[in-house]
Structure formats: C-alpha cells, structure tokens
Picture 1 (cartoon, rainbow, N blue to C red):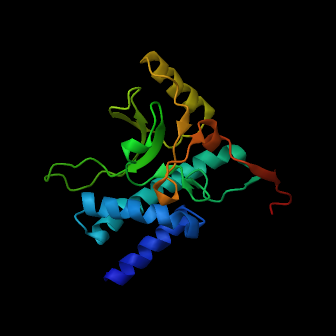
Picture 2: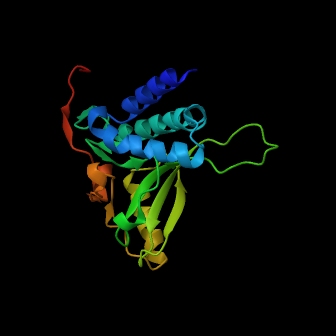
Length: 203
C-alpha cells in the first residue's frame, strides 16, 4: 500500500468515526500525528493496521452500546458519543496536563501495551478513563468496558470510586477543542445527548 492509499484510508476511517469531519479534522489530525510519531516511529501504515482499524471496530461497538438506550430517537450529533460537533469526547492521544483542572477527566483510545517479541498476536486497543489527581500532579488511568461506558450506572460507579479514594467527583470531561483550547463538557452531557423527536415509520 503506497502513501497515498494509506492517507485515503486514514481520512476515510477518521471521517466515518468523527463527523462532521471538516470540524473535527483540525483536532483529530494533530492527535493522529502525535501517535504515529511517538508510538509507531512515523510509520503510518503500521499505525493504520495495528491501531486505527482495530480502534475503529472498538469505537463502533462503543457507539452501538451508547446509542441503544436512545432507540427510536434521532440524535442531533451524528458523531456522538465520540464527538459533539468540533469537540472530541473520545481522544486519540493524551491531552496536555496543563490544559486540565484538578478532578477533570477524559476518555482516551490507547494503543495496547507492548507484548514480548515471542507473542505473535497483538493486543487490541483499549478505552481508558484518564483523570487528574486533586493536586493535578499526575493522572490516573483506568480501562473501561465499552458496553458500560456513558451509562448512568457506570458514571455513578466512577463517582463512588473517586469519592472512596478521597477525590472529588469529576465535574467535567474536557474535550479537545480547536486552537488547542480545552473546552469543558459537564459529566452528564455526553451521557444524555440532545435528541430530535421520535422517528415515525422508521424514517
């Protein structure tokens, strides 16, 4: 596969996951570049085959589970729960800690941990909940199950766990906005998307 074909596949995959792509691309592409350069040593084909395409399957599964509770309703944001217009809810690379406030959290698709060279089958990507410490000195990472993500039951359990550790409930999920800004999204926002009226006749 030549470079042009790899680029077309990358753009097609990203645009299908994060519409409207003309709004999300300015944030997505720098994140992709950071992962390609930092984890895959500039090898875009390796990134595509071993991260982005497996992540696409994972994120599509996440979308299906998140949207099933709104069956019969037409969501206003076609990219939900991965994005809301130009704002990313599920990130492809870690956010700058300096953009976050104590107690903030976000969702990250992470490449799998490296396996020993003797292992032939690579691990799939995973979705992580990344949260800042109360003093914002470090971040905590917790793998989450996509079938539970964005459910009220899961959000309540996360709040209880953080309170038991002495941390305040996470007040906001900061999607990465354009121009490098960190835009705050309320915790309940991604879980309860605005919807249109119920569809009639399956339309």
